[in-house]
Length: 478
Image (tube, rainbow, N blue to C red):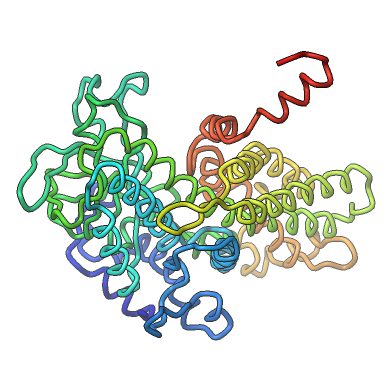
């Protein structure tokens, strides 16, 4: 297993990264990107820390330790252990998911399942390739990103119908030793600070879209692979006013494949269009389980910060306040119950893995997404307008202004102005900053849209018993 320093050193490999139009020669020395690297290093720090080692590390059959993220889930308990590790890492990350091993292993699990199905139905030999790449990532303790979402262009049209043939990533050349791909993906999280990039299809495809049915993996420093980093939330912040986002960050990229060569042994789908949709969906179901697991610290913090604001404002006894707090508690605990149920209802699939129950996973994700903005409203209501009108850090360090802050901004029951402002700044960072906007957009769009979650729920639900019961009580003969 790698140390934090080994992880950081591995990122100095000549990768092509741009930030605000400028080439970044060394991502580890860039002030914004380095914040994302330090955040991602939480996974490696946990493995070194005795408090977390039993949770973060498992042992192979050969007696070698490796990250629990790579443990192929074979029982519901394995999924629960994975969920707890994701939750604890995110808690240490101040409610921001770490993701450098979570999302990559989600993809590896999905690839195992679909490769086994393709080999059985089509006589291909993809599973040995997937297994070899899995062992490579596991045994070298690598950080991984996943590029799935194509830029899409006109979303009412399929890949071959687009005015621009590269709005979906496609194969443009086939060689004896591999393939060449061209196109771009968007929303690629943690790519600037990962070692490997796993590429998956984004949707179901038709027979005419065979060139777009492609899955593979390449190192981040592969020639022709170019990462255009999003600058969102990239300005410098102080930890008093931004207690979360000043030192926790994740970076997304527009990920460009400028005629990238992929060696044959790294290709996991090459034109088998009928498996593009199932592969995308299988990955997403694992990834939505990861998503609802990493949302748990976030919903816990919404409850805790709302309660803290109510205490400092002296309003805990008010009926409407208790009603809002009870709804926040129900919101958080319902999500936790659904996460656990998704693992308990896990389904066994080939080759010997278990997958989270898709109905319950999507119920959990829908519950979180549809309730998130209402939860923010409740927290902001209890906190008050000082979230965006309060004094800054300099007002506390300047003698002629600090006295006014201390005198006038204290809270109920003798709470100091400093403590009250710390609580309000936490809530402001959580609900009213660019970090809050980032989280709010993720709630709607990350890991698939709300409408996609509803579609999977309807597809996964067995309506026959409910319909039979309704017909029986209505006296309708089927």
